[in-house]
Length: 333
Image (cartoon, rainbow, N blue to C red; front, top):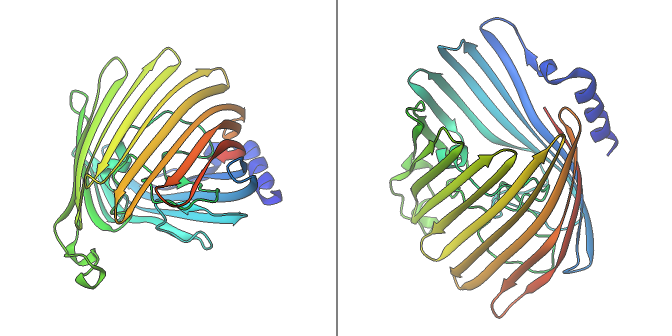
């Protein structure tokens, strides 16, 4: 917590501009987030603390018309007192790891990425409005309860994670943006892992209207898994409403809905996330609903509190149901 407080003080004193190095065509832009949270679940009467950080380094050369660069994303998990699952359990949380590392080029033609990056659906998709530090639909899903289940953690297509791929995103034309990611066959799991390497891709679009409404859809085929995503979002006079859906191989699905309202330095949200899996020998479900209130202390520094209900269950196996309470201090730059 002392290290976190020191970094927060740096954010307040230095400001966001302190993290851009260079004034010519060659610039290094740094962005990221540091979170320190306390979590309590009445499902198993456990209190938990967790600190983690994320930083993105963008070294680019060029200007507004054309730019090339290298992007590096790093996740640095801290100490936690109970179970922590990241993106359907794909990462260990005990060590820092590179989340993305790729080269890119962008201009009037759009944007091209080559390397280990998230697919295009994760980059342009809509999902429920939610400021909770628990992030019920996103990269992080804290299962700090007694039950271990295999629910889908996100409505975005993420089965390919950060494998080697080439991605292309078009410029926005009449509100419409097209995108696609293609993954190398060699980077797919081999037959020894129970998979038959196949063409791996994700394709989708996002349309945004002049009235602040957006809709997106995507389809992905990754290894032997086929899945699709739908999402929509609407802004209106401080109000924000969004929802999304994902189907995975017709044996698992996830749905979310959230509404939020911003007033001055504060924002309130109410969000729910539900997923169900009937396959691989299990019938699992996850249901989380959280009401959250956040307040910006300074630019880039905020405190967020959440309260709600969580239910994790496996048919014929473990289950946990109860209240969920979260309090967090966040630093962003």
